[in-house]
Image (cartoon, rainbow over all chains, first blue to last red; front, side):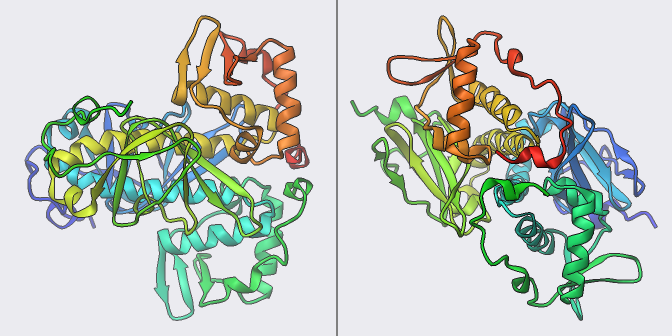
Length: 219
Length: 219
């Protein structure tokens, strides 16, 4: 069911006649315009960049209220993929620059995204891949988690490759580590293969030492 | 010489009587408050996080007009160090939230910082350390570079350890690679040991392949 603009748009100052909701189905790539920003009204969008060797580097996830666009990045290759059905609103640069009210509304959302990206950058600096995965699960829990009886359920389904692309390792390593985490009761999967992070169990996976020489970065 | 408020503060709406310039000398750590943001009026501030093993992870550099504070991060350990003499202005969260004009002014600065952090996150995903260094030099050139006759001079002096902390490698590796870059004529140093990136030479260092297995991350 298409949500109505009234339920999705929190602010009251925009002209409802002119504003249109854009829909992208789960799995679709979203064109990342450079002359404005997309604001997510509903759903989760995954952002990534492409390396010259064809590999993908994950840059984060934007959910309800958050913004993304080529204008907000300095990267030459920038991809946005709908991880669920998403509804978006487009604001042009002019609109944002000329409306202090809109700027005031977008500011906390940019702050939220800045915190996320900085969190991911800090994760990339952990030497041990186990610790990068543990830190990523903490971040996912906070960013795109939903409380359920057993713990926190990640509201979209991430592939092992997505997780590998977020923590600079291989898919095979992610599969092996998630297997270990599952064995320890740290994570589980629901019937839709969504990851569930069990209450208070992530501390069980703290590596005994993060002092390894740089060689241990390999995995 | 202390710059006057009138020359440093670009916006006209603030109350000059109440607004005070804060000075931190080169090398000093700046207290990172959580109930507002620092805005840089002059100078360069280096942001970093600390890992449990005591190592430092670099998160970027903020220059004139840009903002930083604990409020803008989700990281538990957050350090700000003056890489030159710096002058700062403090804005409380309340001020920002209540002033759409201030929000409008800060918005492009947050966008600038978001672009920088995303750029650094993308750099962290390159497998080969040579390529991470090359990409970091491109970023530094853009963020804190100054045109000089031979190329772009980085306006603050970065240690090899700073560079190592920014690209997840060891100081020894950075020293070795910078030596190679210097030999190839890609970089040089001025009398104050500031890095100069020579015009159009960074393309000389593109590694022949970025296809190496993850083991090549080690260095």
